[in-house]
Image 1 (cartoon, rainbow, N blue to C red):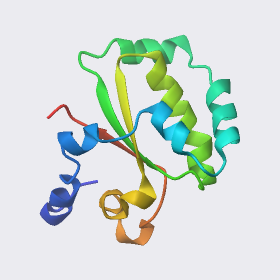
Image 2 (tube, rainbow, N blue to C red):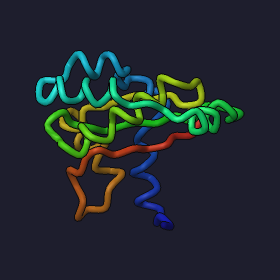
Image 3 (cartoon, one colour):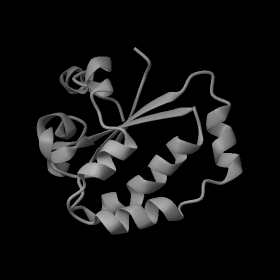
Length: 128
């Protein structure tokens, strides 16, 4: 997908400073109000295959992954725990989480207009 300049400028809203304001896994789990136990159960059940972990361990620099999610969303509950488990298993992936409902404008900046409000959103950020 090639982005036009106005779309590219919207994506630049996630600065390094903003990325670092995201929640850690534990901070996110602590603030979950809906579906907390199912989220924890899925998170604890995930086993990261050694080959997948080795791929991330072999990276020259870790990938930074911003996750926009919402505790009420079933799709987020079924996918986000696996990503968090992967990040816990390797130094090659740094994950910071954002509550979609607290930053709707930012999360929507990564989506086409007809998908506004969708979660989860996974955004790989460079080191800059």
